[in-house]
Image 1 (cartoon, helix red, strand yellow):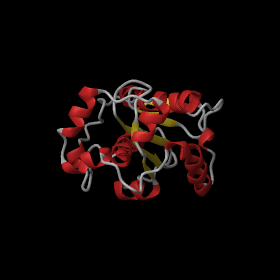
Image 2: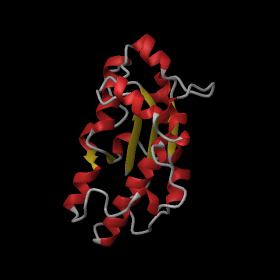
Image 3: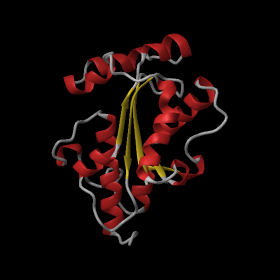
Length: 194
């Protein structure tokens, strides 16, 4: 299973993508701690301006004002850096990551919030990158809040970001891992996985 989180410049599918976080783990009764899921996960910070200038991806004024009002650790994601990765490399990055895990992305269940993140990635692949296929199987996409509700929990499984030591809110990998922790704890608690 994977949980995906994006930090973006807006809510539309064509928004600039600042960063991607992806947690990775197996369905197992063994609970992986937050720090281990972070270590086992994928984090990529993308170059934003080429997406805007060359691909025509959008930046929403209100969303950018919101980013500017966040704390320093969160605002770091919108600041350009020489280490930023060209978003065109994402399919290759996915391939390398999943080969290193010994699985295919297409065989993983993928969770996100409100189908917010995966629809942006699909738009990126099909429109901005002009690809006909996806790295993942869209039939294996699930919404985190809905999954938690179906398992008898609230949308956050009663786990707040402040409950997790070392959690950096609005860091895409940490946000993905937080939802992964919520899902795995709930699945183990109700005996859904063995």
